Length: 306
Image (cartoon, rainbow, N blue to C red; front, side, top):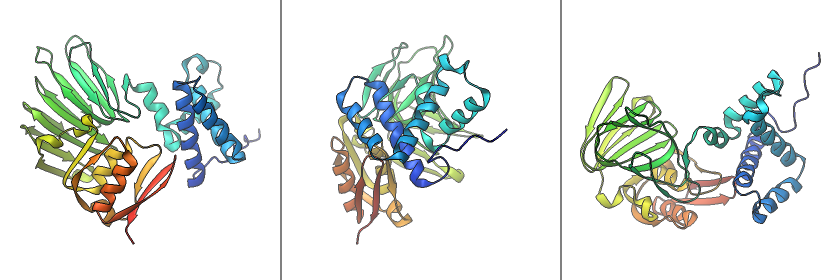
């Protein structure tokens, strides 16, 4: 039996991956706002650009349809497996988060109250799953940043972010997750953070950062800097430009990419207005002796200044 023809644009080519990510973003916006004229116009303009764009959009649609419960029973196993692999890879992690998340914030912060009475603020681009039950309150932070104001009651409250777990009773704190990077910052009360066989107890204004390869950093933040994104601000005090870019990235379409270790490690101090995220990124980059090249909607580059 002949192998099926490989769709155009499929593979590991970075250009094809970029087109698939752009197509996924367009499709997700259409799923949210199917009657929005601007969303339809963006789709049509993308499809008119050429055959590679049309192939990328078709791949994303097939991946979405393959994971829809009502369609699974009618798919051949090989097609379902291929679509799942396409979905779970670099093509469109947004689709996978859609299926797992109970609460999501898109382009702006979102305030909500859980059935338990606990209050949350989600930063833009944040997704979480609520696993609260009769014996415990459990939140899984899938991506982004969330600020928690937890009511004290008999059921313990836990937040997981990858391999990190935060245990609290009644307190106010922030947890952020950017890939393998997890940070926990306390505004009020006390929290206990655990990962593998280690644990830390944090007091007000403490921030614990846990990175790949066992990297651990414990420092103190000014109160005004803790979850300042709730007021559309980003407050930096000798902060790595990479950390600031990760926050701004949640508000921009596509991805923000820092080029070079010198740019990533540049230290920045200042207060930036997140209501205009691209301007905030330009200002933060300039403070770190870097410059920004925007190529929306797929990519924004931060490079060393000439």
